[in-house]
Length: 280
Image (cartoon, rainbow, N blue to C red; front, side, top):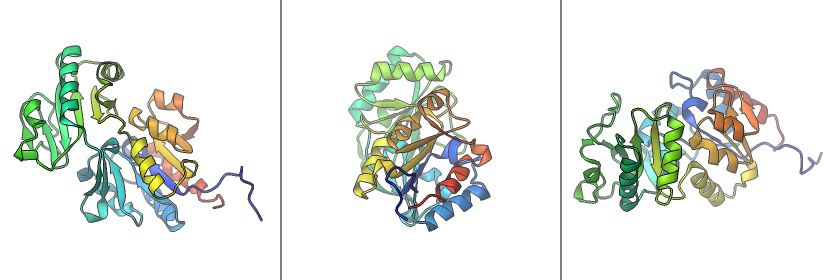
């Protein structure tokens, strides 16, 4: 039987955020989600994890990759091969001049802002930036030194700049950053605190995913995406079908037509199970 062109079809690629989306609150993959990912791969549907996380935080999903083993990390700043130790396949770095311009503008607009940077070799941070106990910085120094292009970080590009403010409302801080630094960088957020994730102009989950899909001949209409926070908005809008999690940020819910259950209720898995019933 011939399926009409307007009939729903099984996606060729599923792009999923991790924290607050695919992962439960305890940062694990549930058995049901693991089974759904495996079933999708067996059916020939490509799975791509698209996350703000750095490659070194991807071990939680390393057992759930499909054949190509690629993931998009750092909000689109890096494509990594997780089957090859997180090797960088593609990098879209934040230029030093842009990063310094953002630092100066935010210091002026929001006194008390502190900075860190994700380099390909790890996290570097200012002394006042909140420390991450599970992932200590490889260097603590003034941000101007951390962004320098000397021998220390030669060949280790800045994937994203992080800006933290102790008292700002998170959404207000994001709005301020976009208004004052938009000429130099892309700002977004995925944390419940006032923590900005800042990438090079034009770099987002959506743009890097679009580039990979174009190279592989996958049309946006055959892509299904899942997300929960502002850093997922562009990706959800670019994909042929974008699902906001039930626990998503209000802006994501407002901008997205389709809904998945919460990350604690196997929301991604439940949708995948339904998608696999569709004809190819």
